[in-house]
Image (cartoon, rainbow, N blue to C red; front, side, top):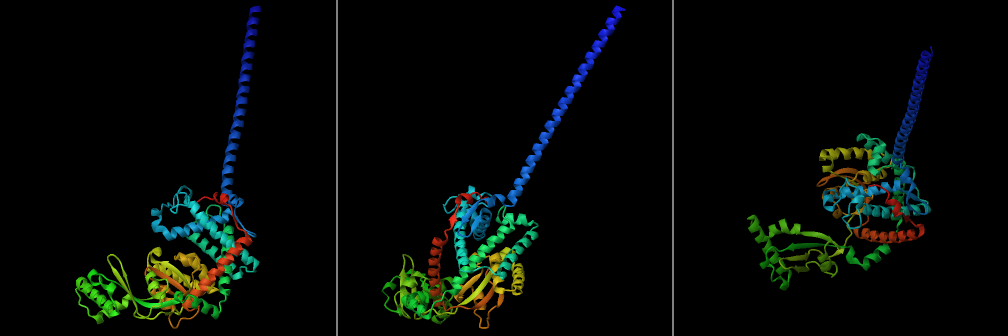
Length: 496
């Protein structure tokens, strides 16, 4: 009995130990599972946090939070943050690319690389430095004009605010046409974080500055006495003359012309040169009558002061008269200048117009360029303010960057300033204020708005000189008065 009990007791003890070990194993496993659950929960929480941060940061980037924290320019009444500056920077960059797109590779500008990693063709740092510097200076001047406008009670009216709505509407239509959201389109056009609100505020600044500068131009009053004084002081600057300009082709016919004593000597050599040229190159015999008809008329043009340096010196600065001549001899050629009219005041008629230019290449053909301008013409003509809508459309769509920058306006233009087809329409006898038309050019089409007769050419030149002097003096005064400050460090944070 004793041995049996001992065996039984040992068996019970072994079973108890086994049960205890199993309980300990289960307890350890439970602890490990609990730790694993905790680790898993922490890992999930970290992932959720990282994802949350990623989407939060991206949301802040998309809505321009970081851009708006930094101020790029300030003046007495204005603060331009980096989101708004990005608008002006992209505009500066895009205009440059559109104007120079055929030469970008030669200039070393690659559109798919950061501007901050490319040296400027102009040796003024990187391309980013170049464009941000230009944008800063332009925007500083814009703010000065806005400050002056505010001080003088000039503000945008309801019609002008509606034009901003029109511009935003056109942008949204472009976004929809390109199957982009508004946010995607604004990002593409002006940089990530630039919103509709930023664009509206920038457009208000631009239009207010333009309105104030236009008011200075429109309100500048120059009396007839002042015009007369300016003309008498430098009459040659405001004069015009007909001049025949001919470069000899055969050296033996002009080698002794430096001793020519009369116009007859000059004309004899000139006619001989033309006859010889046509006989050798075109197998055609010409007499003087045919030469006058076919050649001389095409070599005679109207010149204003400043058009040709030699003519300025020979004619306008020396008091020359009809039939006076001048020989300009080089090593291998000689050019003769013959004054075909007396010098007179340049009182040619001018006109005030607005233009929108579209190249056929942009639209694929003249037909499609014409369809675009026809649609735009109808939209302008049915708007509440034709002149204002035309100006807005010119700034949006014109491919001529010089007139695009001034909202299509061409004041006091003469026939010599325009292509022949455009000149013919503008200066037609039946032209009246408010007329609009699409005119063919050599490589595209013009949509033009006629806004009335301008000043005679000499008065227009004097007016422009007086206005430029007045405007430059005003801007110097504004610089001192309104104190625009540029924060280049903050501007450098913008990506482009």
